[in-house]
Length: 174
Image (tube, rainbow, N blue to C red; front, side, top):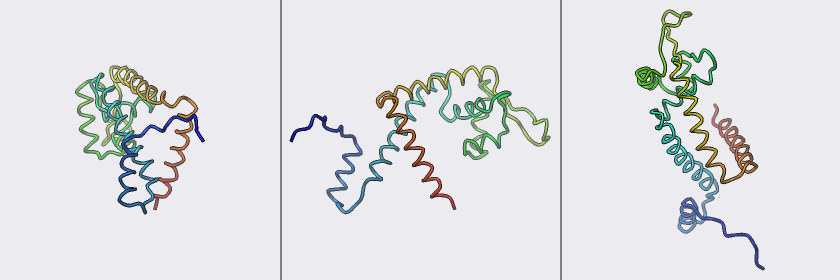
């Protein structure tokens, strides 16, 4: 009986799974098939995003700081602690990013008027213009990658990943 379906494309994860099947046929590699692809996709897209942001003179980490301030809405201000929490960074890691972005004129640090021991971090006009361009460039890269699936399948993938992420995060909670 013949079928009109084209043979399924093979990828590096298939090769790894086939190797395990030869040496350990007792293993269930379904998780490896999913997460191996998720990890490889994350790395490949991370590289593409890094290149997109480099055109604006910023790294992915610096993009994350600027984007977090932008998403906060006017006046585009957060405390360093709020930024660290949102980005899951140590305060030391955040300080290095803030130093570089402040030297580049993309944000400014100033005393917090409501806490004399605290600081606030605010996007500058230049930082606002840059992040608006950079986020558009990053989204264009993501849209181009998702075009391989088409709109309906991309939405389905997003829904499945949301469900898996939610379940995984619930399982990991104490």
